[in-house]
Amino acid sequence: MAVDPEKTSPRSRPELFAFHGVHMTHFFTDNWEKVQNFQARPDDVLIATYPKSGTTWVSNILDLLYFGQSERQTSIPLYTRVPFLEVIWPPMIGTEDIEQLPTSPRLIKTHLPIQFVPKSFWEQNSRIVYIARNAKDNVVSYFHFCRLAKSHPEAGDWSSFLQRFMEGKMVFGSWYDHVTGWWEKRQTYSNLHYMFYEDLITDTGREIDQLCSFLGMSCSAEEKERVRALTQFDQMKNDKMANFSTIHTMDFTISPFMRKGKVGDWKNHFTVAQNEQFDEDYRKKMKNPKLQFWTEV
Ligand code: PPS
Image 1 (cartoon, rainbow, N blue to C red):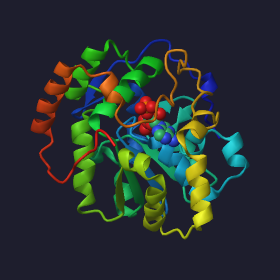
Image 2 (cartoon, protein in one colour):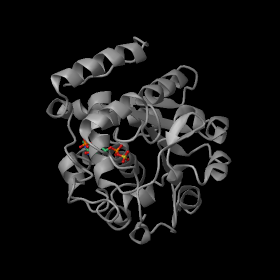
Image 3 (tube, rainbow, N blue to C red):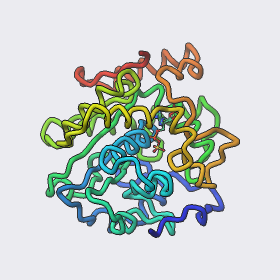
Image 4 (cartoon, rainbow, N blue to C red):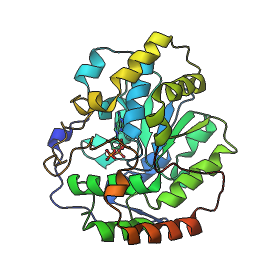
């Protein structure tokens, strides 16, 4: 497997730039032609999210559901078991890492907004699991991640970060467009399972059940319970193969990747004024009454 993030070390933070109308950094656009021409397979499972919405959690759940608890889980980092399609950070090159996967089905991670997804996924009718998280917790999680991850532009201070989030000036663009674009696709593409981080928190077992039926898997109750227990926050936080601690470009002295894993932490960050401004702006942007999020559980 080509992935060896131990050797990756960006000297400076990358710049954010507008790319086909979406803010990105070169780590996710330098391999664009290969990403767009990527050949999906009918049995591929794409795990799609706006960053910080529960990608790692669901990747671990699916990996365990498909491949069980084996040496893979204890010896191969999750980011290698579930490669990141659009990333190019040599020697980590998503398209190549996917080609080298020995497993079937292939589990693939992406943060691409709907319009950037390689067309072969639609042509092959591959299964897609999309996880959305409420905007307030999402922006808080993204803020802390940008502080710790040198692969992203500097976070700056909290209030300017929040402002940029509302303007869509984040890597992978606007949260509002991302969750809405994928939601609308779900109306016409039946192999898309749209789920919410908040539901996973409130009833992980029920969400695993729904994932199994969507994926056409017949897992026993014991198996599902084992997967639920193995993917609990504290379990994953202490799992070196799942908590990104093997990637030294993330500075865990600033914040851990597995930070809090809760719904409602935004209340510890938003001031009353910021919350009012955010809500007002949110109402203008989120017009679809069917797409609703819980900001507390
Ligand atoms: S990334 O970098 O976009 O792939 O990040 P992603 O995995 O999507 O999101 C990271 C946030 O998910 C939380 N997380 C979990 N919460 C509950 N249970 C489990 N098992 C779990 N695993 C990851 C993680 O802590 C990040 O959220 P915050 O709010 O920052 O804690």
